[in-house]
Image 1 (tube, one colour):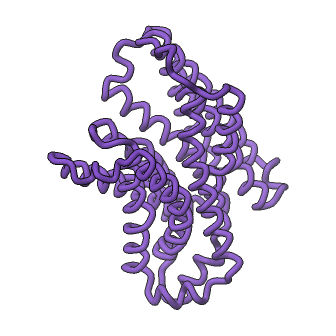
Image 2: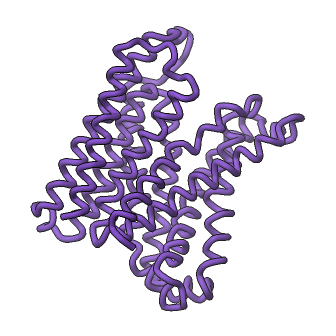
Length: 338
């Protein structure tokens, strides 16, 4: 596969991961835990297991052949990413969407990029490609900061939050967001250090692209454990299990499955695209996917009217942030050619 096709697949994968949540806006009277548990079950269990079963010949044998240490590493990275996903909701609730998302994406992008880059050989960091990747990440982080500021301005120009809203201290929320970013970066680490697992799949008859499906299966099953436990806890505590049987909510099941297909499809496209981008695919592809994710989610926000009554200053900051993200994507494209 040509490297530029890999670049395009990563962009499409990132966009898919950025827009998958759109149906969540239209599922009342379901609560967050209802739609999230449904989405997670299909995205992290049903689809990856079904896909691996359908595309990896002798899947059971491949799992048995794979080194135990490598399998455990990929699984634990996936579980760590699941913890990061749970923490993101807790942290953002305390410090706000703009600040919370900016912090966790910044931390996740930095770690998810630099760890694979250094692991590929410390000398690569100071070569032209490594320097360009670092510059692209710095540009991306600057764009995230502008988007965070835009989010704060938007909130200030729209309806003010009620004083009765109870939140934990800003310091604790910021700490949670930092840890969320650290754990969330493990999704890319599972991919970056999955070589022995992929090799086991190819040894039993899978092609290189299909072998990644086994990697994602192990990763996402690990991610489902903390996600399933947390949503199950909320469903029980809030007594919202019965919401699944409410009248006129059958379409919401379709929404949850659509979310799962969109998100998991984005993961698959990212894996195939990053693999085609060479030995530094995980380091180059991850910041590109994060930039596409933010752009995609921002477009959804504009289309669904989130910015309708925002101030002109907020919109200018948002436009500037998106411009920097596009610049970061262009720099990654240049790095991909070096």
